Each structure stands twice: as structure tokens, then as C-alpha cells.
Length: 239
Image 1: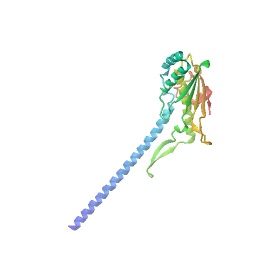
Image 2: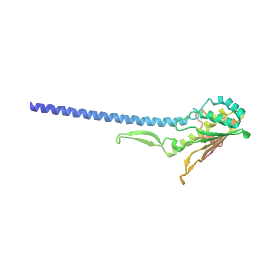
Image 3: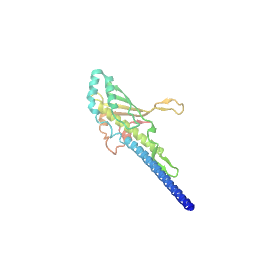
């Protein structure tokens, strides 16, 4: 009887050990699946952010032309400062993707019928540093797949070009045709001088666009190259 009890006890212990091993293995599998799913989620988030930047022109505000009459009325009632204020408020209604705020200031030059727009451009770190994320099972870690510097530079330059074209398009829509025939877009970026540590705000992009010439640009064309448009058609100065 004692031997039988010992055998039963041993059997139960072995069964319990197998169940514990199975439970631990299931927990490891579940944890690995969660981490793999998290890696996929991060990858999707990166792709979505880059795609949103690429849609910057097609996702621009389409209702600002309806405000041009209000802008003109403001100018007739209170002068150039009222025109600038109305245009800035109109531009502020444009929704940008996360990471971009669309902040800008404007100035109106009545004698030239020109609007000057000073735009605060994003820094290059707005471009995701990773192209994707993957789960490495042997290390039980989620690791980023680094983006190549050349690709980061290219994406950043295209982003700045799209910002300039989008801002010009929205400003031309909001500004009355009778009062604004040209827009000067100056894009600055806030940074630190690596040599001195002092804050600097270099001019990265300057565009002088005429309304008639700008109206010929098909901003919704998928094959439109924003950089080629700025350099080759609008003669922009890009630092």
C-alpha cells in the first residue's frame, strides 16, 4: 500500500510538473505574440505617419476660398492689419498631421499686392528614425530597423516642399484676388548652433509665387514632384 501511494504521489507530481511546463510555455508563446503584435503596430504607425506627410497636398484645406470675401471686407473696414489677421485665422483652420502644427505669421505689402508668409518648419527629427520594428525572439526584444540617412534627407526635403506648396495654395485661396497677386513664402527652422550652443533660426526655403503661375500647378496630380515644382517652376531658393 505504501509503495502504491508513493507511485501515485510521484505520478501526480510528474503531472503537475508537465502542467506547469505547459503553462509556462503557453505564457511564453502569448508574450511573444504580444511583442510581435506590438512590433507590427509600431511599424504600421511609422508607415501611417510617412503616408500622412505624403498626402499633405491632397489633404489640404479646400474651404478657404469661401473666406476670401470676409478677408476683403476686413481689409476695406480696418486696413492691412485686419487682412493679415483674417488670413492667419483662415490658415490656422487647416488640419495638419501629428508632428506638424502649421504655425506661421504673415505680412501684407499693399504697394506690391503681396503677402509675405513666415512659416515655422519642423525639424528633421519629425521623420521617423525607423522604417519598421521587428520582434527578435531569441533576444525577446523589439528592435527598430533604422532608416538610412539618405532616405531621411529625401523624405524631409519632400516634406518641406509639400508644406510650402500647401501653404501657398491655402493662402492664395484665402487671399482676395483683387488684393493679393503674389505670395512670398519664407520657411525657417528653430535649432541650436552646434559650434556655440546658441539658438539659431536659419532660412531653409524661400519661394516667390505669382498667383497666375501658381494656378497652373496641379497639386492633386500623383506624379507631381514637389521639389522639382519649387526649383524648376517657382524658382525657389532651398538651403
